[in-house]
Amino acid sequence: MIITTTPTLQGKEITAYVGLVTGEAIIGANVFKDFFASITDIVGGRSGSYERVLRQAKEDALAELQENARKLGANAVIGIDLDYETIGSNASMLMVSASGTAVVVK
Image 1 (tube, rainbow, N blue to C red):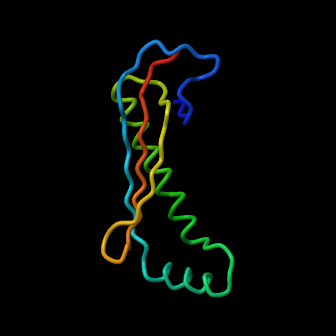
Image 2: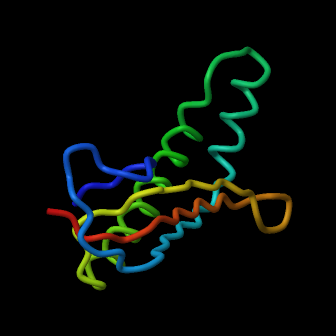
């Protein structure tokens, strides 16, 4: 399945607009990741543990979006928008939501 943030697909003809599709992923950050991230904040550098969690949440949201598009008979999703939010008490969870337009291309 082709997925893109652009509103069109170069070299492809959109034959049908199937509808809006979404995918969401909510992932909690555990205490050990918080601890190691706080050390990284003190000494500087990137927080690899949070980057991995964020990457996994994005992949999960996009996978759900693609599955929802397939269920509608689409073979591509255009205009994808990714949103990132922290939710829960003390912002202890990360939510990634993906939305786009499911289309049929040839």
